[in-house]
Length: 143
Image 1 (cartoon, helix red, strand yellow):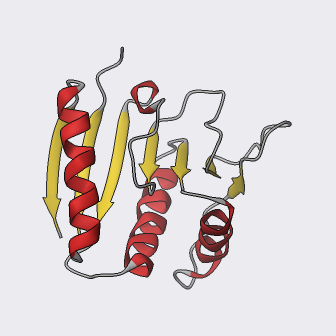
Image 2: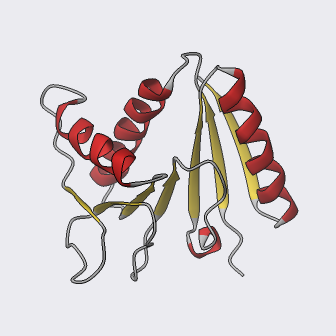
């Protein structure tokens, strides 16, 4: 098992849009650093919403990305998927799901984004405990 570094980004804002916008900024930063990124979402609707937002979240931004829905696998450095994880090595997993993805151990870095609403914080606490129990290195960033 690879011991991943897991960063919890705790936002002062609330709501799913704040979480998605931060995920876009994080993916853009990772892409600019030549990292390969997988963004894990909860379903097809969430994937489509994030797909649209990655084109519009900031004027002048460019984050080459594709939805991961099976073969053939997309070539973009940023993938979005809900049921399937990429078959190649990625540098960063941005988890927007409610639980820890089964293959999270395959990623050297994992980013968890937490908003200020109680529901988001409650779900993130459960993920924090799961990562801690699996022996991952944990960091919390209050933004």
